Image: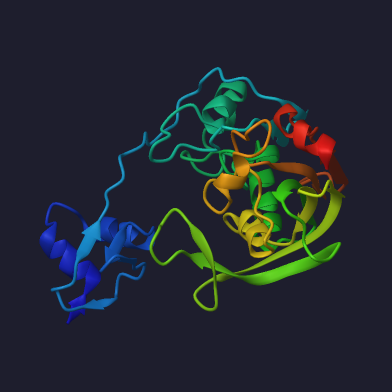
Length: 294
């Protein structure tokens, strides 16, 4: 028996141990088809071990003239109404054309705020999720906002989700652990251990007999949290290709081209002025056909 990272290092002598450890932690290594994210996992050596190496991304994102919908801006922060389809920061498969590239064009001195790979980024939205996202423009704002979002204190985030079906109750709370999916590294799953607490308070704001509008206020910000929680209620988000119901999506008119999830409201304390601020982003046009019937 030996450690997984040591075995992979012996098989890939051209790679550093830290690189291999990073790939394991990020979920790029499977043992007998199951993702293993701990470098110290003991293996015999006769298992089927696969390691995926993602394509490199530029170390320093470049400014790009991508249009932005600015909701609010001052010397410390900028609040964006992110359009669906826009990736927040460069990643494998999306080295350019991201919100970060657009921000660097809009704010030339943003480059070194909080790190050169994700300058100013405090929190994220999925590529297909639209709505409000706040970005720090100074180190002081970055530090204050980072602490607020990490602690989930004094930050109120409310989303609108258009979902198939309707929950049994008019309102409720989903509270569970979310962790990495055991097989698919791109997915998350509700788990009993080795996960992080995820809390969503929700209420039904509309219902037409088939489709419901659900307002979700999240007390945590886990990856895919709302999408997983709505699916756990038996009401997957319309257009969600990962956790949804594609057959039911195809019965809708129009057929959704993305997941119908929108970061609708954001309230928080300004990082330097000690005043509470609240923002709201209009529901995007591609969601309104479903809203009209719900």
